[in-house]
Each structure stands twice: as structure tokens, then as C-alpha cells.
Image 1 (cartoon, one colour):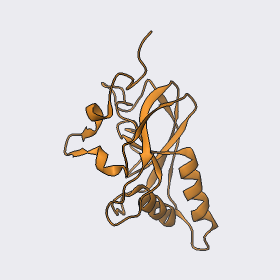
Image 2 (image 1 turned 120 degrees about the vertical axis):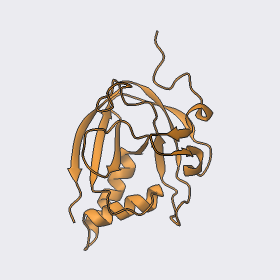
Image 3 (image 1 turned 180 degrees about the horizontal axis):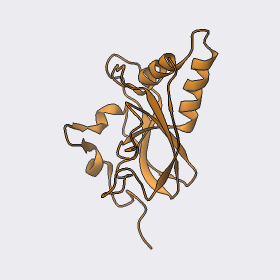
Length: 161
């Protein structure tokens, strides 16, 4: 039987997120040591994007569905709600840096069981954090980052300003 994605890895083996331009310690984004968790098929995850360009699976930071829905509902109930407010709520809760370039959201659904690290966000960039987040490395196909053998894109959409 084949291992599930990330099953044989410990957090210390994946916490140093490296891409073409930067490398950083992912532990700094968590308030405490995250828990290695099995995510099941049909689990929905969300994240902000700069542009909907198709490379959705190469990012490692995701919001669980319940967190996204709570933030989305809070923004919609505000008399001055909209995309900018939702983006600001997400940035506050997920301890993201301020950025006017985050204009889209991608929603994915897992098609296979995977291991991810789940924990509360740390207080970063002067933001409170404290919201559950998912760290899910290795999701993209190694040769084709626009696809994943473990997930599918449900939809992408622009934030309305």
C-alpha cells in the first residue's frame, strides 16, 4: 500500500518552505506546534491569490472551509462589506502581510487522503492571528504545478471591490 501524501514526513522536514525566490521557517506562522492531521477526500480548502493564473496547487497555506465561510459571512453582513473587507478579514485572521494585489480566491477539493499540518496562526505583521490554518506542502504535481494528483479546483473567483 502506498503512503499518503506527506505521511512519511515530519514537520521538521517540510517546515522550511522554499520557492524560487525565498526560503523561510513555516513554524513562525503557527502559534504553537501544528498537529499532523489526515485530511479526507471532499475536504474543501481556500486561499487568496494575486491572480487566477492556474498554479493553484504550488502554495502551501490554506484556510479550512469553516474558517473561510465564517470570514466570508462576517464580511457579507457588514454594511460596507465586499471583496476588500473580506481580504482584510482574511489578512487579519491568517496573519498575512498587507497587499492590494490579492484579488482572487481559489477553492479546492481534495480527491485523496493527505497529511497536512493544522494549527492556529501566530500573531505576525502586527495582526492578531489565532485562526486555524492548514499547511499542505507537496500538493502540486512535481512536473506540472497546474495540476495535482490529490486535489481538484472547484472554482476561482475575483473579489468585488
